[in-house]
Each structure stands twice: as C-alpha cells, then as structure tokens.
Image 1 (cartoon, rainbow, N blue to C red):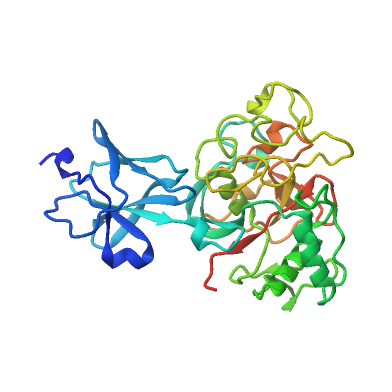
Image 2 (image 1 turned 180 degrees about the vertical axis):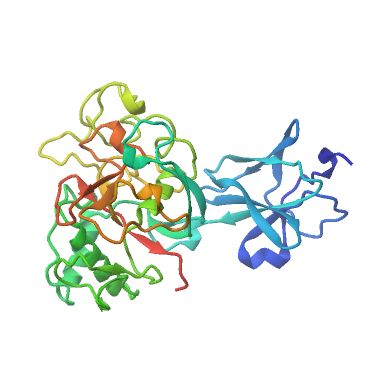
Length: 390
C-alpha cells in the first residue's frame, strides 16, 4: 500500500485524550475510526515523499503536530503553529512505513492567566543567524525552553501605579513613581531592582507566591545584587533572556524580526534610518505618529499587530529588562535547557529595542545590558509567569 492510500482525510477527536485537549489525525494502516469528527482537514497536497495537511484554524490557538511510531511515544513534528482564523498548513514527511499523527491544540486565550499567553515548551535556534549583529549574539545554538506564560504587552504606567500604591502600604516602601507618557503607555524610568520588587508586590497583591528573595526573605526594599529567583513559584517575574527571545520569535524560525524579514513604521515604533537591517520605512527618523512633543516618543501598548504568539511590541517601543546577568561569551557555554544567565555580572540584560533606536537593535537576536541601577526613558519591561500548577 502506498503512502497516499494511508491518509485518513479527517481530524478526529480521541475520547481518551479529550481531557488533555488533543485532536488526533491518524495516518497509518488503520481500519476504523471510532470518534467524532471535528476540525476536518480542508486540503491535502502531495509532493514527492511529503504531504501537507491544512486545517481551518481558530484565532490565537497554538497547534503542534505530534507523531507516534512506537506505542505511546509521541514526539513533536516541526515548530508550533499559531492560528489566525485562517488556514494552518503543516508539512509532514511520511518516509516512515506507518505512523500516527495528532494535532495538539492549546488555546492561550482560554487557558492562560488574564493578560498572558502560553508560550509552548520546545526548542528554538537562539542567536544571530544572519551575521548582522554583534559577536555576543553568537554562536547560534539550540535552546530548549519549558512552557511559560508571557505578558501580552509591556507593563503600563496605569498598572505600575496600581500595584505601587498597594505595595507602599504593604511593606514595599521604596517603589519609585516611574514615568509614562500616558496611562496606557509603557512605564519607564524604573530600574531593574525596582521592577523585581514591584513583581513581588504584584504577586502578593494577587495572592500568588513571590518569586524573588534575598537570603530566603521576600525581596521588598533596597537594592541587593544577591537577589535570587524561584522559577517554581507562581508569581510574576521577568522572563529569562532565552524565554524572551523564544517568545519574541512568535513560533517563527530563521527570521530577524517577530513577524518576518523586514521592519517598518507600520509594524513597530523605532527610529528608522537607511535600508539596513531590513528597514522598510519610507520616512526616516522617529515614528511620525508618536514624535509629538517631549520624549519619550512611546506608543500605547498594543498599537501594532501581535506576533505569532499574540505578543505586542516585542520590537521597539521600550527596551525590556530580563532576569539574566549579562556575559558577552555566555552563548558559548550556556545550558541547552532553560538557561538563566551567568551567576553574577555587572549588567542585566534588556531586549527588543525601543522608540529611540534603529532597526538593528530591534532584531529578536539583539542583546543589550546596563547596570541594574539604571533608570532610562527608553527601558521598560513585561512580566512572565512559570507554567506551574496554581
């Protein structure tokens, strides 16, 4: 029997896996399918020994094809694919004599905490694959990141003020006012230490376990370089540098920006100049919509289209602090799974570029760092949460 005759053109709900959110597409030597049919395959295309299967997707859901050719040994096939309400096409190589495939469907809108999206577990290629950046972005290396939640937007001045007011009355007595061009603009001019204390206050306020401690005590005041992070805690925290880059890539691989190969003022708030680094803006300089008076020329969060994971402003608007200490040579020796940066350093990492910098700094692989005491009108942050039982 040839490969084509072993295609069952339907996506079937497997009742045994229904609670885990699996939909199963069976490809193999099978005789019957005793399940309800949902999300039918809408197109099957063949080329040589490959087949592409297409489904009508649900907006903002994340799809991962998994393969089994040994009993109960499922492995991922390709990268996760984010639906946009259109057609999701997943190419499969069917060189195996027989196999079973299933489509794992995660809906970050319904399963994630409010304001967050689920970033699925799995590997990605971290670093500059185009030779456009700096030496600290090399070597390109495969990193496996555990599933986690990422804030859809940068933290706004409104949310900063709300949590700060609560914190000042609950032991977080030195949280700074911070800056912000408007309530729905990203907060800025708060340093790294202030941000992690604010994250703890936010966790306390929402009944979650704070992530940051100093000497085993919840970090509430002061600036202590010995602060540690409990990544198993349920509270709010900064993403690691690896988490940030995986999230910024939006499920894409081999692309310099969160959405693809080029960048323009229709996609991000940054300083456009020349044609380098994929810049496609016809008008040079600051973003014309937001260059409207005193700096910073920030934009309201979510002013541009989201990337494939549903995250906004992963390029431009504000740089975003990460957890990691910075080392220019870290990529040469970092762990293959869940790297969290060196044990010490003089600067903390921030990522993503801002309203004030050129396209090259807005690349997903771009790295930057400063002393964690720095306050800047170009640096803000977004929060993450570990994917742990609540």
